[in-house]
Amino acid sequence: MRHNENRPVGVAMMLGSGLSTQVGAATAALAFPVIGPAGVVAIRQWVAGVVLLAIGRPRFRSFTARQWRLILGLAAVFATMNLCLYTSIDRIGLGLAVTLEFLGPLGVALAGSRRKLDLYCALVAAPAVVVLTRPQASTDYLGIALGVVAAACWACYILLNRAMGRELPGVQGSGAAAAVSGLAYMPIGIVMLIKHPPTLATVAYALTAGVLSSAVPFLMDVLVLRRVPAQFFGVFMSVNPVLAALVGLVMLHQRLDHWSWAAIGVIVTANAVAASTNGRRGRLRGGSSPAVRRSSRRGLRAVDPGIRNGCRDGERRSPRGQLGTECVRLRPSRR
Image (cartoon, rainbow, N blue to C red; front, side, top):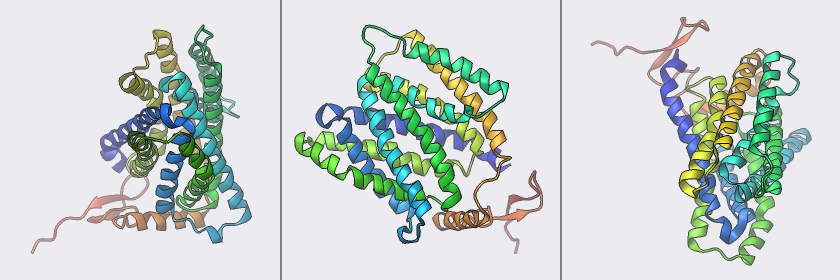
């Protein structure tokens, strides 16, 4: 019931998160001519590292060898995915690069599935990808290849995060991985900034991109998932390629032909269908261990003290609703 009541607010926040991500990427593109994609990615990784480190507050000394392997793998994926995506944006445009990147979540949703609906999604999406990347005189094959690599990295990111969620509570893993990735980009960023001295405007663009594409979406998504089901969140994420194409048109004057728009629409639809059906199936599977879930709940209460047993201040748990209980508003006492 609370999900239904909060869904309009959740939709608005998801739209804001998606726009923030794509506007951040477009803002980063404005700095490419001066410091290049690698320089912008370095600054973005530094911003992400500081923000996620402060939020996740990882306990580095308590991590096991297995947890460190997951963290280092996630850090490598962070670094590679953002560099490939931004370089792809620089070469083939925001809308096309982000659409290719979204093939990663689609591939994860379809991998290993034996259902006919998932097979239909793959059969529908494949021709759309061919149309989107069809050979032309001006086709940048390297840019397309980098977009596909970014998609593969996103698929790995999803799988690693899934494993991380079973090993570490809250966002400790993401915070540690972002910090490691930011440290790895220190020498790269320093070299790029020395070889290509940035202007004040360029630094402002890169920092803005880091905030809009990393800090804002992360914090917004944490709040959104308290208001809408995870399945609905996954489906709504599929609109990002459309938002990217629109932002690229408005901010960077990157125009797509009718065939490209149609292909983006088909890929978004296939992604949404796959996410929605696999989301329902995923709820039946086991998640993290009870200890991790208890620790995550404690961490969530530390972030928002108003949450107590799933209810906010001024509410109490009542034995009603679909799951046996629900949060109801306390009535003011009459004196």
